[in-house]
Length: 132
Image 1: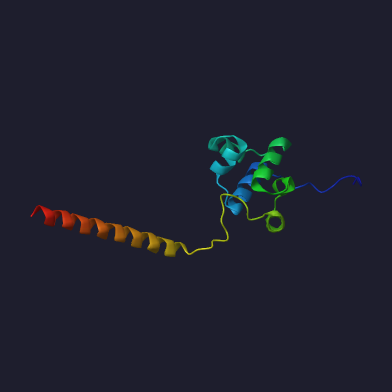
Image 2: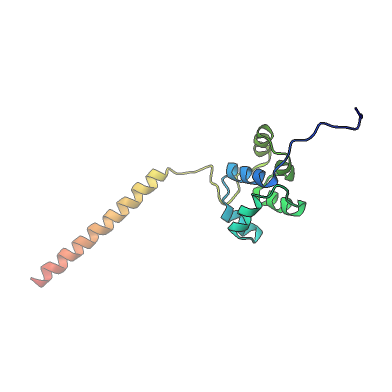
């Protein structure tokens, strides 16, 4: 055995790795497409490619806010470490730190709609009394 031989590296599928990272980060294909000036269909095709040129990998990595190595050398344990150490909660498509309860907002909206309907009914009753 030659000393320069190395163990074969596992086959890497760049597109599949991009898709996995994108999904883990909660980023939509549409968002990536708009950031890269591509169509959503182009992103879908990109995610199917086994090997992607370095220039495109760098652009995708920038949009996902992860190092290019995360795409090139993805495995489950490394992925979580990379995301934990390099991803910052400033992606416009994700809100991890919600500062309000969505249910409270729905109740507030319902109450405003109900009040508006009550006002309409009162106005209609007034109009009907004026016509009598």
